[in-house]
Image (cartoon, rainbow, N blue to C red; front, side, top):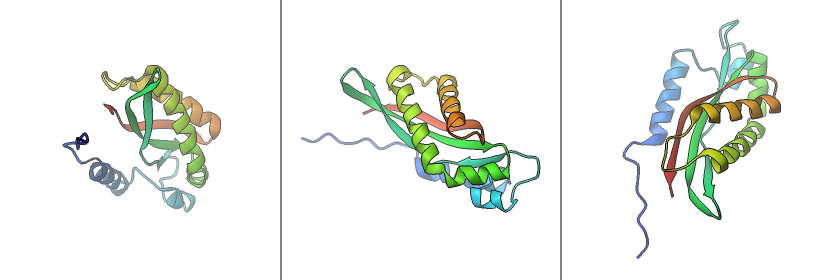
Length: 146
């Protein structure tokens, strides 16, 4: 008999979309297209959202679970935000590699995620990939068993 997949009680996608809509409505989130047109306030940091990233948690030779996290990148200025938006695929792959390294060494689906260490490793990798990244902000993180 095939195993049944458990669905989360909380809807994840609508919550994330609602949060991003609230941030953009409040003027706290400016997309890369708006940033290049000067849509953000002058002198304020510009935020560039990324889609959710899911990486496997591997222990030994088998997969224990999945680590999921969602990032928002803070750029130094609107021009840097436009550059980040243009190279979002490259930055996503850099974040995925850093997340896989973190999941392999420090994550477990049976304990809380060490978000401070995850942020440090993501921040270091993303700043090395693009100097326009001021800070990597983790807006949602979770680990679940397979």
